[in-house]
Length: 465
Ligand code: PHE
Image (cartoon, rainbow, N blue to C red; front, top):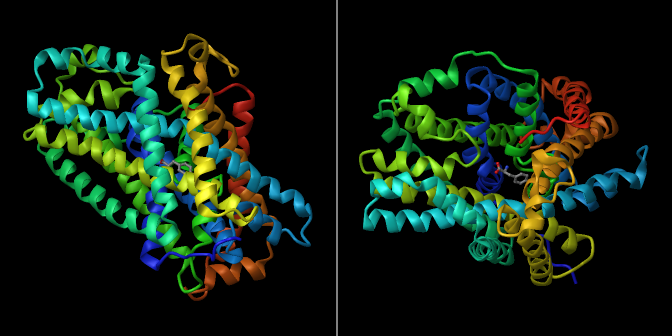
C-alpha cells in the first residue's frame, strides 16, 4: 500500500529546495573551478547561466512536480498523455532516477571526507595545530584517500545519516532537519565571511571574484554545467520536491529565491576560501597551496588555523560543509526512493533500506577507487582524464546525465506542455505573469541551444570537472 502523500509547509519547501541546491557544488566545486578559470569573467558567465538557464528550468521542474503531485517518472507519464512522444517521455523520469543513484554513490564519499575533517580539526584544535601537522597536510590527505577502511566507513556513515532522515519522511524528516541545518549553515558562513574580511587577502579576493578577466570557451561551457549541478537541475530533484508543495505558493518567487540563495552561498564560500588563500604573500604562493580539487582538505586547514580564533573556525567550517552536503544527499535519495513509493507502491521503510543499501554498495567501489584498490583506481572507461570509478561516475553525471536530462526537461516544458497548464501553474499563488513569454522562449530556444552546445562539446571530448 502506498503512503498518503505528504507535503512541505511553504517555508519548508524553500528551505528544503535551497538545501538541495546548496551543497558540495557550492563550497567544494565552485571555488576551485572559479580559481581554475581565473575568477572574474567566469563568475559573470556563471551568473548569466543561472539567470538565463537555471531559473527557467528550475520553474519548469517545480511546475511539473506540483501539477501532478508525483515524482518524475509518474509525473511525465501523466503530463505526456496526448502529447507527441507519449509514454516515451517517462524515459526522462527514469534517467533522473538513475542519475540520483549515480550522483549519490560518489557524492556521499566526498561528504564523508568533510565529516572526517571535522573530527580531525577537533583533535587539532585540542592538541595544537603544529607546524609539523601543517607541513604534512597533503600527505595526510593522500594517505586518507588510500585508506579503504576509512573511505568506506565514512561513506557508509554518511549514507546511514541520509537514510535516517529519509526514513522519517517528507515533513518529519526532510523539512524538520533542513529547517535547523540551513539557518545554522548561513550563520556560520556569515561569521566566516566576517572573520575573513579582517584577513589581509580579503581585498584581493574581492577583485579576483568581481573584476573581468579573460575566459576560454571551455570556461563558458563549464560555467553552464556547474549551474546545473549546483542548482540540482536536470534529474528531477526539483520535480520531486515540487510535488510536495501546494498551489498557494508562487513558483516564480520560490524558484527565484532558491537561485539567489544558492548563488549567494557559492559566492560567500569563495570569498572565504580566496581571502584565506590570498593572505599568503604572492611570492610564496606557488609552493604553498594546490589549486586542485583537493584544496579544501590540503590547503584550507592550515590557512583556517592562521585566522584569529582558528581553533574554533576550523572545525566549524567542516561541520558547515557536512551540513550542506547532507541537505543535498537527502534530496538525491528522495528522488530515487519516491520512485519506488509512487510508481511501485513500496513502503517508505522498504524503499529507503533497499535503495540506500544498494547505493552504499555502489559507493564502496567509488570509495576504493581513490588509491585503495589498484584495479578500481585505474579503471578508465571514459579515458585517462577521469580515471577510477569515482572520477568516471562524476564524469558520467556532470557531463552526460544532468545536461541530457535538463535538455529534455526544457524541451518538454517549452514545446510540449500547453500554455494553459504552464501559465496556470506559474500564476497560481502569484497573479498575472507578464514575463511569461520570456520564460517560454528561454525554455524553447536559449536552454536547448546552450545545453545542446555542452552535449556537443562533450561528444567532442571535453570534460567538465
Ligand atoms: N546541488 C547539489 C550541490 O550543489 C548537488 C546535487 C545535484 C543535488 C543534483 C541534487 C541533485 O552540491
